[in-house]
Length: 196
Image 1 (cartoon, helix red, strand yellow):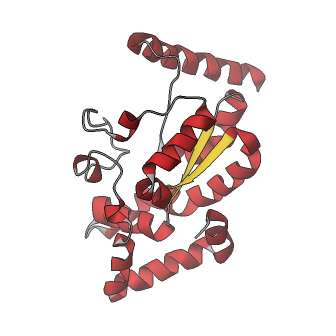
Image 2: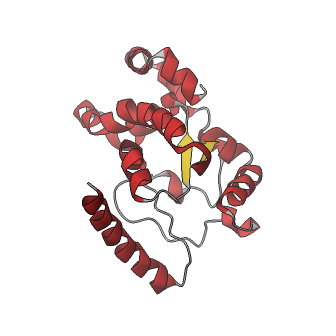
């Protein structure tokens, strides 16, 4: 097992090291939503890494997935089972596993008070906070499919605009029933552990 981990670690360090070197950076940030499924493996590979857990109202995540990706094609929803049903439990377990190597933040706090949240995050990461960290107007759009193809083009800094959009699920009888079923599937204990 340790030989396998050494191989994976070497592979990742080669790839990430090349990217850091190409851009003249000391650190590499890897943000992938599906990493929630392998936090324990990542921690075993990189025990000195620092982890950031981003929490968001589960109904807001559901609303976002439905609006951004599913639309009227309900079969598409099956592609997001890992995000909607599996990830919360993995993130709750990660909190226990990671201890002091974790920084937890809530999406709602980030978009409501970005300066406060990002400055605390910088302190955790041992970085100097700069105001321009909150301005992503000059940042190229991310490549790949695991990002928000809608919201990223709408704003140049964190915005609380979408905080209440999840409440729209209650306006349609079918969506309301689906949302309540989703909350039942998550369970009260998990929802409370996430802080909602």
